[in-house]
Image (cartoon, rainbow, N blue to C red):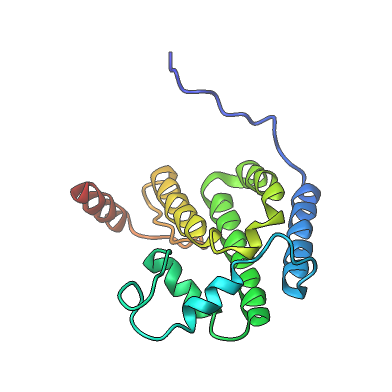
Length: 181
C-alpha cells in the first residue's frame, strides 16, 4: 500500500480550454505592448534606468536584481521606456509559453492546463515584470528531469523533442547527475 496519491485522470481538459487560456495570454501581452492601461506600474522605468547607468553594476551603481535578471534588464532596457515595456512584455510572454510547454512536456496536458489556469489571475501584472524568466528555466529543468526519469530505457529526450537516444547516454546522464549530488 502506497502513501502516494493516485493519479487523477478524471481531469482531462479539452483543447478548447487550452486555446482559450492561451488567447487570454495573447490579449494580455497585447495590452502590455500597446501600453493600455499603465496600471499597475511596469518595471520598464527602472529597467531603463539600470540599463543606462554608466559604470559597473553593483560597484558603481545600485542594482537590486540578481545577475540573471540583470541580463534580462540589459536586453530589454536599451531603448526608451515604451520599447522596454514592449520588450519586457514579449520576453515575459515567451517565458510563460516556454514554462507551459515544459510542463506539457514533463507532466502532460492536464498539468499544463492547470499551469495556465493558475497563471491567469497573475496576467494583470506578471507580463510587466521579468519574474517568468526564472520560472521558465526552472520548469524546463524539472520537466526535462521528470521526462528522463519517466522515459523508457532506450530514450533520452532533449527538451521540446521526442528523438530517441542510446540507453548508455541515459545511464551516463543519471550517473553524472547522481555524482553531483
